Length: 394
Image (cartoon, rainbow, N blue to C red; front, side, top):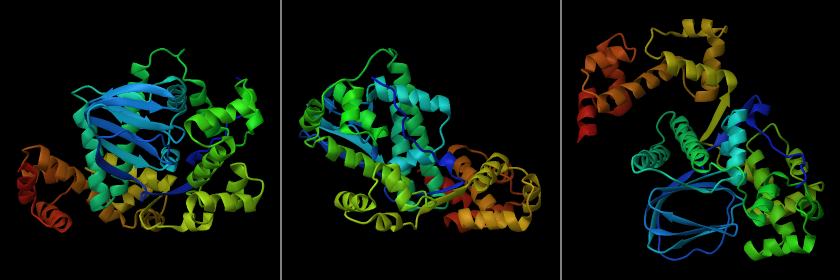
């Protein structure tokens, strides 16, 4: 197959980015009957809790059972076929969330190999499966309660889930000579070569255009052009999160040289205009600048030290006013409140997971006064440290 320039983009291209968590969802489900072949715009991870059956993906079949961990990308036309009722946890999140999370080059190369050669199914051990279940449930709770900084807990857990899958896939798919069937390769190719014509894609795989359309109709029920529209609009939606990019730029980038065609296809597939899509429900967005992220990481690393706004401002070579403005703009809070919230995160963990005396916990997480610790803890949780410990242990 010919090598052709691949279209990709990353948040490293932009100094700041915005991500909404409104389309992140976790659910528990039971499937008794076979699904119809389908695909979706989001990324999905599924953990099988019980039952047995088959998974059909792009014309390939896999046996699945308890503790199997599955990843679906938008180019996966798939269906679950239960032999016994399948119980599973499922998380769904937009493609742009992966764009938002930074990845090293080596990680990206390994991920590309897994997409090209690996199975969508990896097997977790009986020991590892409960930890994975806990990640699903923690995300569900954070999305439900929306406590301070819940966005970062969600993002952290999603990254863990992605990394665990990648690690297991690299371990379990040792042969790098394996390749998926032709349709799988074509769908994956289109996912990143969305400017290619039917003739160019057919040539890349040494097949005819009629046979290319036949492949698509057999699995997806739609021809090449309809599938390419879906891929282009899916990528356009991922780029909408970057407000620095104009609608016209996005349309041209994903392959529409006619803006009116882009608007028509976008509205047909999404039921709204690109502007409406970009504006919808921005209230729970995570807004991050490189400096704000560095400040947050610094506070998490040094939370138990005698920090104040002067020392942290000096560390980052900025004025107190500048640091305050950065925190207000990005995290909607001030320095003291942010540091206190981080310290209380660690305090709650120590109360729930250890038998350390309350006084020792207060000192360990950075408070210099037990009275200050108790006051802040009660304001944050609505209960005393001792009451909180009792409620977590029951």
